[in-house]
Length: 329
Image (cartoon, rainbow, N blue to C red; front, side, top):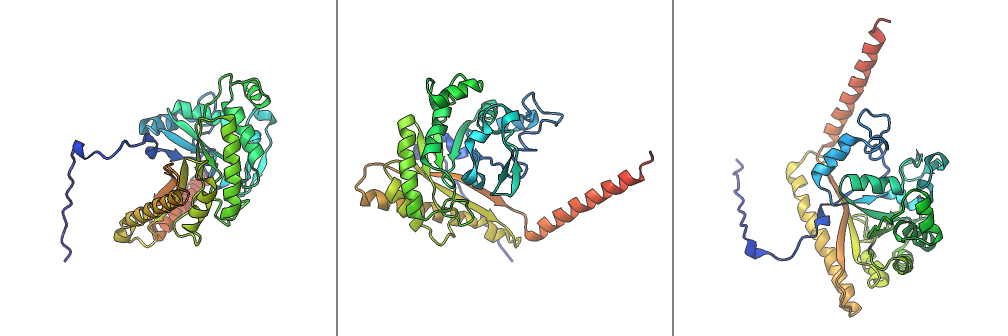
């Protein structure tokens, strides 16, 4: 018979180690599924505001007090042209979205998302495309967002109705470029060199920004942690953070193993810290690299529970169909 074990916690204000960056409570949203369209943005919904954003969702996110939200991807960003999402909506192109194989209408783009983030009292963590694009698109993008005016891209922002710069301070240099599923997937050397030169160009436009280099997509990648080491060999002095991504599931409905995933996360973090410190020592650098755990989530459903949910949804749809068909007209 299993015996219950008691846990003990000691809280003492004198045990303080360091300040906690509020961004540790940040979040992430991507043009995937119903996250944007049908999620935060749904113009025909009864709770939509004049810009098409759902006020009920805004209120809920405000209650969460999320300090920063990463956007627009995710896998989507690796083939995304940021220019498609600015300017008059009726002039924006509809594109094939290659990460999730959907049609991207570009109804929500940079300016709309910045407005939404302000409404929920969050900052924006913007990701740039280093899959199919590179230095030139990145420098133009940050000029559009952050430069006060008097240049082509900053004046274009003003033409689009935004007189003041967005002043987005945290930028991701691509997304999960170690992944073979990524459009524009690169080796660590290829990515590191591109990220290094892109970072230099972006800082010339706005020296006040913070930059995040792509770490491994997860701790199970065959190139982990050599990817981090090689990437930081190129970028250590140009970036402020290296990213960590991790998802944990419970496919076998095994609660003990599921909860033990916290140990895997700890090991992941400690390994990346060790790699950062190794490169710091190797370069004889005085700079401290920081970690950006900017994409993670948990799935507590087992595969069987997911099947039961899908079956329930299917039965509900069929029941609705039966009711509709039996209604007298």
